[in-house]
Length: 222
Image 1: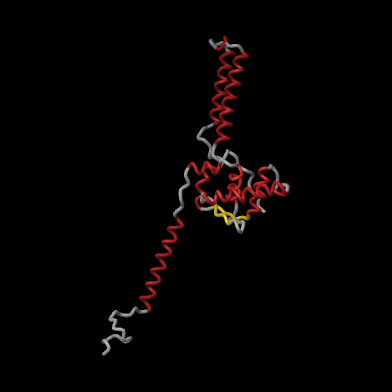
Image 2: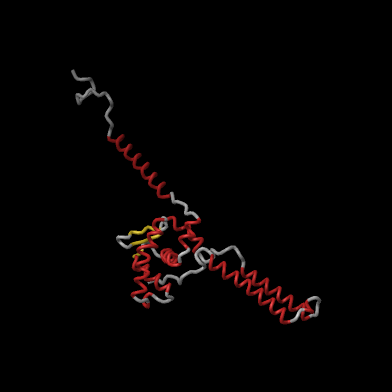
């Protein structure tokens, strides 16, 4: 004897899902998967300070990152190598030699781009020779920008030295003691040493700042 309401003869009494119910379930599952996917893409790992400094201490990697920041999406490794080689040799892409191009290409291919890829700063497809910046690369902008230098107002320091020097010279010229007792040669020496000290400090901080304080020429639009 078959159970009432069971047309299949299996003995199950659970109501069968209607097409509308199945469609709603699929739609809900799709929304949930999309939300999980978006959340995963939005999560970008923070780059440690030590990692950033290690990456940016190499000028060739800095040049590569500069170029990728200006590029519209992914670029070919050959194109990247040509421009980096041109910057390193202070010339144009058309003027670099085959040896200069090959040297940079090999270093990027074997060392620098894999390192940047391992750090999740770029997405590098070594087989296809294609590279592009990742979402985490935005964390390097503050180190690569021109204004990302130590928070020292060098113009104010130079101006301060100039004002102090003018004051010393004026006091000596007016015969105000004890400045009137200082020999002109000694006064000039003090001013030169002061300017030299500020200039040396400026040079040191510029060269040792993350990114080296350097910015290659703007990428020329083709």
